[in-house]
Amino acid sequence: MSEIKEEVKENQEDRYVIDNDSKANSALRKLRELKAKKQEKEEQAEEFKREIDYWLEKEVSSIDSDIEFYEGILTEYAMNLKESDKELKTHKLPFGSLKFRAQSDKWNYEDDKLVESVEGAGLNDLIKVKKSVDKREFKKLVKVVGSNVINPDTGEVIEGVTIESREEKFSIDI
Image (cartoon, rainbow, N blue to C red; front, side):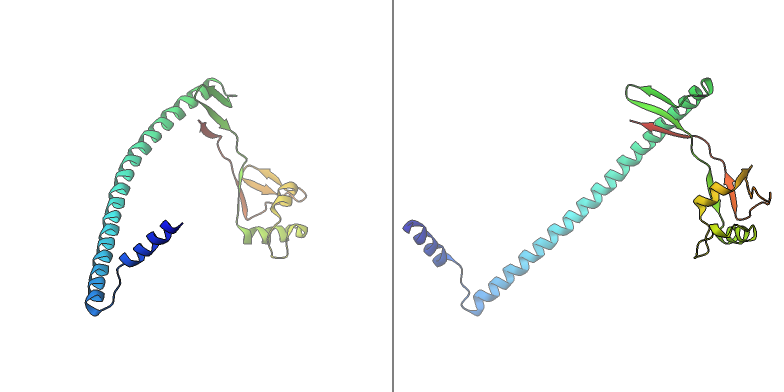
């Protein structure tokens, strides 16, 4: 225990103490040099980061091109399989699957026209206080004919909404 106390005492005695302007000036000069060195290292690190980012971008763009190529030829292959078997949903392989999934039709709304049309069609129960159509209930009560939406009670075309048929969705699982 006494050895530790003596070591601490020696370290305190060896400690640099500023007790005049000359030593203070030397310490300020050293501090300036250290801060400049730190700044230089930070700038050097930033340059390295820029170089690494450039390298990464170059490497990744090449890989992205390869990914696009393989996805393209796999899609082409899957489409050929789909032509042979119209009911094909999933083609499983050891390293992944080629999948086709039906997507529901996408409803494109023009809210202002739709609200007017629904009000005019007497379907006011579907209109929310903020003057928008309850689209979930709307879909249940109307009939789709082609790309038009019809009020089944009156046969009237409801404006402000069109139906866009969508193709099957294709995906690749790895």
